[in-house]
Length: 154
Image 1: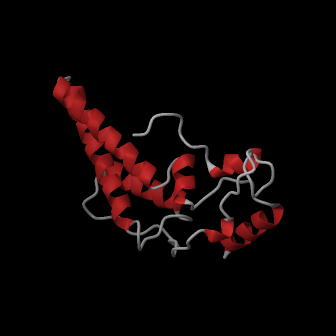
Image 2: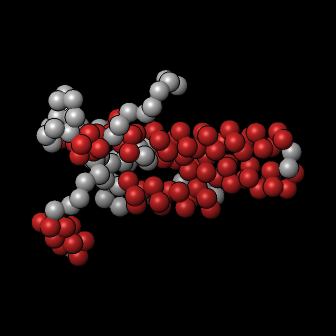
C-alpha cells in the first residue's frame, strides 16, 4: 500500500477547485460525461440461495445503496464474494466470542479486513468511487428531485 495520505475524492476537488472543471491547482478534472456507462440494475437481483443471514442483509443493502453504479453484468460475482465474506465474518465473530482463542481472533481480523477491501473495490467510500470514476456526491437540483419523485411513483 502506498505511503502518504489517500487521494482527495473528485467531488471534493470540484467543490474546492478554481472552477467546476479544475482543481485548486488549476489542473483539469475528468469530464463527468467521460464516465463509462454499464447497464445498471433496475431492481435488487435475487441473492444466491446459500447465503446466510449476514450475507443476505449485505446483498440487499449493497444493491439498494449502489444500484446506480453497480451492474448486474459486471459486478455480480464481486458482490457475491463480499456477501460470503460477511457470512464468514459473522461466523468467525461467533466462534471467537465463544473460544477467545488468539488464532480465532486473528482469523476474525483477517476476514474483516478482506470484507472491507471487497467493499472498497465495490465503491463504498468516496475515494474508491472517485477512483472508479462512477459517482460524485452532489446535491440534487430541484428539477432532478422532481424527476426522481415522478419516476419513483411509476
